[in-house]
Length: 316
Ligand SMILES: C[S@@+](CC[C@H](N)C(=O)[O-])C[C@H]1O[C@@H](n2cnc3c(N)ncnc32)[C@H](O)[C@@H]1O
Image (cartoon, rainbow, N blue to C red):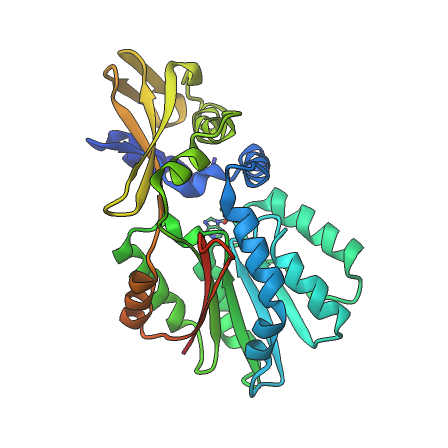
């Protein structure tokens, strides 16, 4: 049994506002469902970030190579790296000296990624790390030669899982593992017409709903729970003031769920919710204040042609 998963579920489902941490989305089925989400036309984030990386891969390379001999591209929460591969393809073709280090908690997605890298880019130096972000950064901190820059990628609006304060904490911690001259490229989803944001999550095929309900299946499988996922409804809502889209699983009836491994009974009142995720949307002004608060300098904002999304390059 994964003890941290057990502890987090126990405390999350005992709180007044019940919650399940978003990091537990990504078991094998969850990672597969997220790949399906990325292909949905209404999930505009993917197409926007592809447009940015494709348009600016050359400009980014100039930054990555400035004043250093080489770089280690550290991809935090790499997933299937489908977007990062735009950079990898271009840099391998150009014979650029660099190492690629994808970091992800999900074992299944990372081993599929390593296989696909070996097949597509036999000359690419890569080293997958099946670890939590900070465990990986701790190892990389002393492993990277001073002549080489660390370029940390945090793509796909992963940072949107944090509130503003949590993002400042995240960046401050990240900075503690970096050296002067190291860089960070972060994908932020921007505020836009609320209907567009809402539709990206309440998708027509119900895949985002399945992705959220998969958390209940996971508790059943790994902790001996008896959740009936069809007694819950996925409900996302967007607050244009805070820019937070918050996802919930709402109980459709009064019910009691037992979780054997935790020796726990969880009571739900009708319409009570389990909070699963924040997907925060930003403004450029907010991104700049965030970077400054964490002690980074902004090198450049790279926007897609609709200005829906930005990849911001930071340096320390
Ligand atoms: C939203 S997906 C993004 C994937 C990719 N970066 C992209 O842009 O398509 C988030 C990924 O981050 C991983 N992840 C989430 N929290 C993590 C953590 N604390 N440590 C390591 N990996 C994490 C998940 O397993 C998942 O594969």
